[in-house]
Image 1 (cartoon, rainbow, N blue to C red):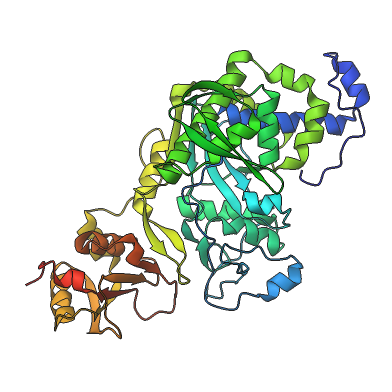
Image 2 (spheres, rainbow, N blue to C red; image 1 turned 60 degrees about the vertical axis):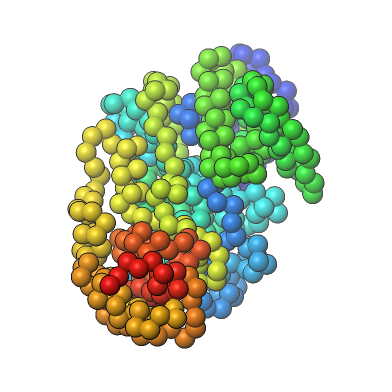
Length: 494
C-alpha cells in the first residue's frame, strides 16, 4: 500500500450519505480507505500500535566480511549507515544447510475461528525521514487474538536482539526488514521479518502490518488527541524536517496531539531509559484504545474516509484483506481490557553483550523468552517444551565445548578452574594462557549457548560489558573463557 496513487477527489469530508461517497470514489478506493482505517483502528482497539524500543544503540554489523556485498550492487539501493557511519552489509549465510527466506505467499491465512497473529512493524525514524528505499524496523510487536477465549496479547521484541536471520548471518533483529527489502526477496522486508520472528518465538505469523510515524501522528490528531496522565515532568523532542523542538510536559492529566504523543512515547532520556519508554508507549496505546471505544469513533472516521485515505494510505503496508480486517475488528472489539496481556522481551530475558565489532546487542535466553511467550499466547500449557532442570543441569545438557585461557596474574588458574567446572558438569575441552592480561573475566560465545552462558555469567559474576558474541558455526569450540584477576580474587575454587 506504500505506492498506491493519491486520490484526485476533494479532501473535504463527505456527508454521511453512503451513496454520495460511492459516487465520488471508485469501489476499489473505498475498500482501500476502509482498510486504512481498520488497520489502525484494530491495532489501537487491541492495544497494539506502539513504537517500543528497548535499546537506543548502534546498528549491528553482520559478520566480519566486506561491507560491500554484491547484493547491494544488484539491488541498486544505497546502504543505510549505522551510527559509526558504516554501511550495513547484506551478507548471505553460506553455512551448509542454511535456508533462504520465505516469501509473502507462504504466510498462512487466518481461518476466522482460531488464534490469529499479526506482526506490527514501525520503521526506524532516521531511515524513514531520509526516505530510504530499505529501512530498519524500529518496532516489532507480535499481536495475538483468540476469538474463542476472547483474549488478546502483544509481545514487544527489542530491535537489538541478536538472532539468526534466515538466509543471512546473525544480526540485530531490526535488520531483517532492511535485508528483505534491500535484497529484493519475495515478500520483501515484511516477509523476512515475519520468518525471523517465527524462528525466534516458535509461533506462526498470519499477517503483518507496517505503519509509519506520519500515519501514527495523523491518526491521533484525527481522533482529537489522547488523554495521558503524565507521572512526572518530562522533556520531549518534537521531530520535524531538519529540526527538533523541545517541550516540557508537566505532571498531570492532559490531552496530547499526535506529534506530542509520538514524542512522549519515543523519549528515552529519563532515569529508567528505554524501559521507562516502554511504559509510556503502552500508556499511549491504552489511551488510543480508550478514546476509540468510549467515544465510538469508528463511524466518524469512516465519514472522513477521503481525507484519511489521502493522508494515511501511503503510510501502511499490509497483507491483510478487507474481509480479514473486518473479522479482526469484530474480535478485537469483543476483548475486554482485562483480557489483554502485555509483555516485553527485556533485561530479564537476555544478556547484554557485544557484537564482533563492539556494538551493544541483546543475546536471547530462549527458555525465558518462551515462558514469556506462553504467558501471552496460550491460555494453558506451553507451546514448546522447556529444557528441564536448574541452570547447572541445563548447562550440562547443552554440553557446550569450552576452552579456558588464563589472563590473570595467578599461576595455574586455568587448570584449577577447568577442574572445578568439570566437576560441575561443564564440557571443558582445553586450557591455555591468554595472549594478554585481563583485569575482568571475559566470555566469547561463538555458536549460541544460552544455558552455558547463563551458568558461567552467574557463577563468575561476569559483567554485561565482558560478554561478546562472535558467531562462527565452524569454530572448533563453542565458548572461550578468558579468566581475569577478578575471578582469581573471588576464592571460589580450591
